[in-house]
Image 1 (cartoon, one colour):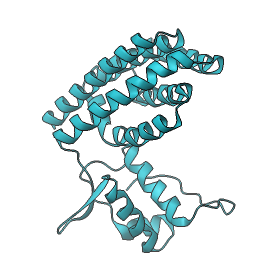
Image 2 (image 1 turned 90 degrees about the horizontal axis):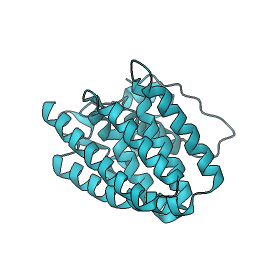
Image 3 (image 1 turned 180 degrees about the vertical axis):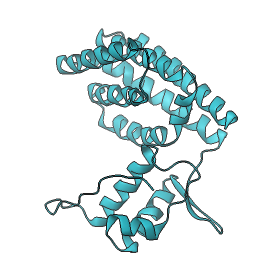
Image 4 (image 1 turned 30 degrees about the vertical axis):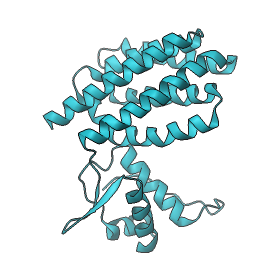
Length: 225
């Protein structure tokens, strides 16, 4: 069971069911629940100090979004994407994210440039270390957060956010291939530099290359598994 701190603040207005939903979703997205692993209502209810009703509602909501599924004689388990679903997600993501990168390069403001410079420095520091720490896969999501804001397209950001959840939850498997995480960081750096300098076409092209490489890494890892 994921060992995550649980603090329900009285001043927060969101209902308990929403907090429970976010808690379970983040546990899946962050890899604390693995593909195929059971999620037991009773244990979660005890851990979160809530009744089983909001747990059940959250799991139903997550199942409708494809994060979990109910299996006969096994109960609720974390979903495992099929190869066809992986290709579909990466295909859509490549189209939308490359567009966001191009728009960001065209509209990037000084505040975004400052953030990108900081991320680039962090990547450079990480790449200079003898061991590339696993936590550095979060560079992807840090850069994307900046890029999506720089693109100044709320509708596009909304679509990308939902797809990014799937990538976080399932595509991290590709980072387990030797050398892929370091290579991905280098790709992220190139994308960030292109946006920073306002090179829209280059940012678009680099993003498509990065996502194609990520898809291949995930598929290879899936075959090994």
